[in-house]
Image (cartoon, rainbow, N blue to C red; front, side, top):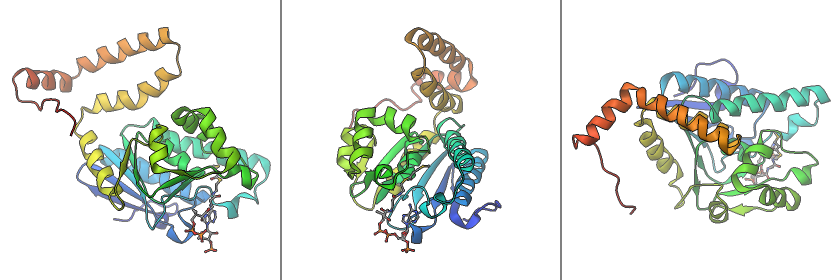
Length: 264
Ligand code: 1HE
């Protein structure tokens, strides 16, 4: 464990477990608040994982997933630096949302402000039943800058996001599941194990299909229906051409592949 990259190596832990990379946000005394160095450390770890792993998990060391932007750095910044800082968060989180491998977030404690924005950039969200979500930007006199107005808004809807930002209220894991903001709520203490299990399962998929899911779905969501359907046919046909698809389809027909199971 431990990353060998330069920027803020101490701020994240990195571990490879089989095909799954584990990135731990590691600034628990500051509730994993994300400083400029921290954003770079996340980027380096994500790029390393894309080289070495087939799926990744992001979790927070300590009781909380992430308290968002490091507010102690933020107030000092001149306008143009603030813009560039926000754009850097976008680039880093985009590497997670539209990169080469699927990511699972194991959310415990607070996922607040930029912490929720980070969670919104992964493909699968697992929440501990005690986890909570908030967007306190309204009280702080700032605005989301880590992609939340796009990603969180599309995940839970602009009305719910506006409610969270205007009222600053805390939303429970159970309510967030109802809102579609998380896909799994698990008993206390089990989020990381569940996230690892899901990541390991996605790592077994065909690489091209995972890439298409990660990259085609959000883009098609941005298209008109007509363009989306056309793009879908192109991606679907390309997927079918891969050796992986040929072998996996043959395996199914020869009864060597796992069947779909009824849900538990
Ligand atoms: C911080 C931060 C931070 C904690 N920046 N230092 N985010 C927020 O507005 C959330 C602010 N944080 C909190 O509401 C709470 O800290 C928590 C609910 C997350 C956790 O509470 P608790 O009681 O466990 O911890 P604490 O005692 O509040 O915090 C421990 C220390 O971390 C304390 O510092 P200390 O020197 O007194 O020990 C806190 O000041 C520090 N800390 N959170 C800096 N965020 C790209 S735009 C995104 C915009 C946003 O993200 S806005 C939301 C910012």
